[in-house]
Image 1 (cartoon, rainbow, N blue to C red):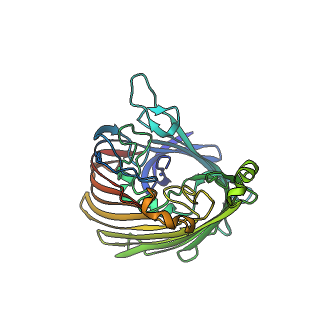
Image 2 (tube, rainbow, N blue to C red):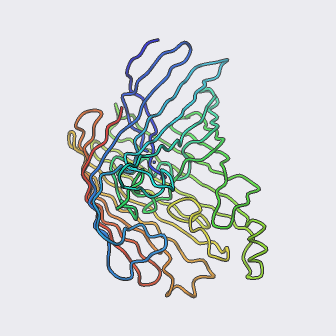
Image 3 (cartoon, rainbow, N blue to C red):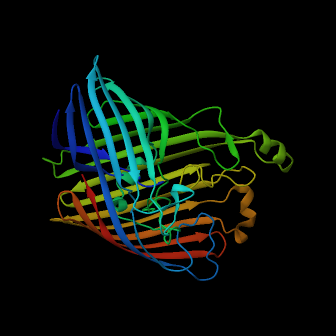
Length: 417
């Protein structure tokens, strides 16, 4: 058995929420016909959250914290990670397996590692085992993946979010941190999530690649019956070689669609009220990232109906099952000077009322818009350690006059290995 370090590309993750492609010095172990890799990260941040404790701050689906201000030492958008992967070549197939464990530094409450934290004595953090999948394929025809891994829709939006290395919006759980912060989840993109799936990815042809898969369908409110899977597809094009070209970049396009039915008890209980017995949700997103010397720009947007906001199929319909439209996006610019990267980012996520809710818009405290602006400093202390400073100004607005603002001051760092 031989152990050595090597550079590899790893997809790390963000909380209940994920991961940027990051060159890491992983540990490579050669054992027989298998090559085994261990990689991961650890991070910690001090976050001072100034929360809105004024009147009329209740916003259903709002992501700005309310109540007393809070100070916390916590994880950022990424939890810690320990990722194990193994690859080999068998019978003309490239075979691989990955299992990823994502512990936090913050104590977990009864709701689990992705729920509110519990900052009290004699508590312990939890472990989010979000990755468990295997792959087989060949560079001539592509790769099949089976298991639990990151989704296709919204994946690149979070992987290219500069706050992936920091905190972004701390959110409603600022005073009791869980495994992760929000970053731009729900404030520029819908969280891609980690889902059971069977996915096929093509080889890369002159920079083009595509993926398509069937996924575990997700519940939405009382709609918990599924007679068909969730479908996701994605395509991307990359250009330029960072080693030789001044201008490099990528563009991508994704889609997700799913149907859901009310369970039999909900149908019988609500049929007299005219509740819809089923609905379909569909969304598309697109983005582009361009690198020119030390400058990097990202522009991303999404639009959907019956897809919800913040997470897939959250707040997707009215009480009667009428679908709500949602859309949003973010713009981001960073510039690197030696070891220091300076970044600015602004994003929004909007949720429209369903047709049967529009008459009550003036009295509805349902979310209308989450928005935030981020100023970030990211300093490469070593090739493994990045020190981070961020200022984040977030706002949640309801359809009535309610609104809440949050300001986060962030100092900390992250280490990849």
